[in-house]
Image 1 (tube, rainbow, N blue to C red):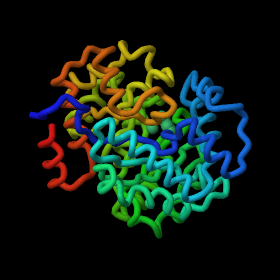
Image 2 (cartoon, rainbow, N blue to C red):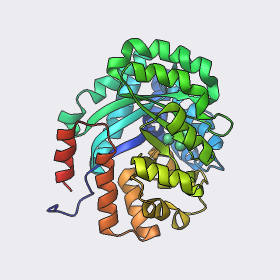
Image 3 (cartoon, rainbow, N blue to C red):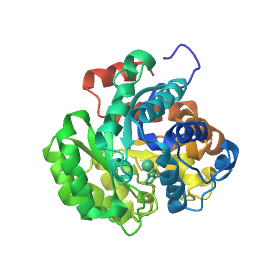
Length: 327
Ligand SMILES: Nc1ncnc2[nH]cnc12
Ligand SMILES: [Zn+2]
């Protein structure tokens, strides 16, 4: 039992580091790198954070990250996330980054990796948070570019913990990425993929059956397919659900109508995460608090969701047991 009433200890398993870019850091990086922004100031940028769907968010997400040019920018980005994450009870984070979004605009992969690692390699000492990196392929840029990206990543495989699949989902089914996921598996990396965020349950089936992912990112549309729910429950395949993201991107009409309780009732290993917290109005514990407020989840359920985050993480068994004992 925990002695105090601070935020629950938890792991964050679905967090895009580029989605932690707060407007203040956008302007600071733009200023020092001489990048022009189509926004007058921080307030005007923040006012633009109103989204109709995933694509309308991605348009702004890719635009804002254009200010990230140097290793120092990526270090500052990760440091800012870690400081926030510590306040939110995070003990372990498996962090996504989008190599193609940087390499395609002329920022070398080494700059991104060196910059992130300069922060993350000391995250445990400075913030009490162990960290891992997961490189995501941008599915809307196709399987061929994903393979080219993998060829650039492979020499750095030891610096990575896994690969994932993200960006615009509908029209870009997981099965197209079977070969590149096979190559990453052969290199000893963990596999995850966004599926069933906006896309149909069939994309979740493909992620587990064709790509062989160990976790499904989002996966909320699995609720529409009884056989899929049974399969995910039977295999204990975790879903990394992001409630505030789902509302902001209009994947669900309101938090009070989120079908998370049905996923839990079906016996799924559900975790709660923040996705792109700078854009969606809250970091990971804010998601937990919103579930308490809007969905009426009680202490026991919230504690179970926090425990699931350790169960679903890729940490060593000793670390998992140690972290579970904190709850
Ligand atoms: N919620 C999300 N879905 C797909 N790709 C993303 N990239 C960053 N956030 C994302
Ligand atoms: Zn995501």
